[in-house]
Amino acid sequence: MVKKLMIVVFLVAVGLAAYFLLGRNGGGEERKQLEMATEITSIKEVAEWEFLTVEMEECEDTVIPRMILSDDRFAKIYKGTARLGVNMKEAVADWVTTSHDTARIVLPAIRILDEDIIDDTQTRTFYESGKITPDIREFLYNKAKMDMRRRALSEENVASALANAKAQFTYMFHSLGFNVVLFD
Image 1 (cartoon, rainbow, N blue to C red):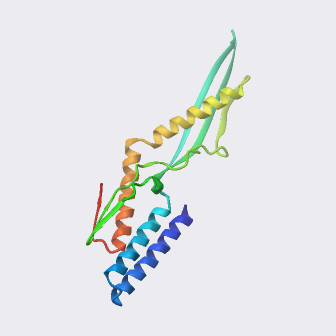
Image 2 (cartoon, rainbow, N blue to C red; image 1 turned 45 degrees about the vertical axis):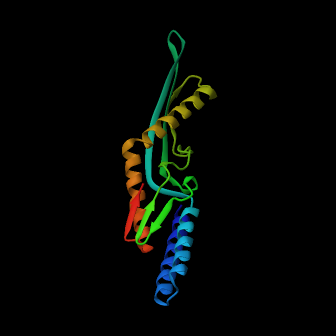
Image 3 (cartoon, rainbow, N blue to C red; image 1 turned 90 degrees about the vertical axis):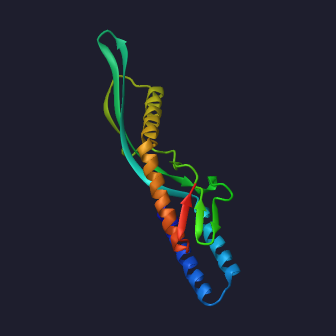
């Protein structure tokens, strides 16, 4: 993700340099529009843009009665990270429209970028007694994953990621020379 961000920053810097050099050397409006289109295309080609990281842990447990005085018990703490952002491959064809000094942007919906939320290396068994089947382990793993997804995609988190996305895209498009950046 950092590598993609560095590539975008580099492309934006090259685009800005070209934009200002061509503008000062009389490169013409047509040439400026071509450079701008190239920069906008490179922004879309990065594909996944992360705007919020949510670290979580989820405790899942179960008790399975076996005999009168004996139960199988299992408790595990699952840790994970959800990365919220947009996938520009899901953007509509005309995701950016420009007019003079105004850019109008249509971003794809905020979503979890990587479905592998749970970090198995940080997940720990808290308590285990008796016989726990692989099916029960898988059920608890999937339950923890669903609970983490639900928590990561809360209204507050999605709103925060969207605000970060708008701020970052506004900054980029201001750098490209647009004074007004609007979002639909």
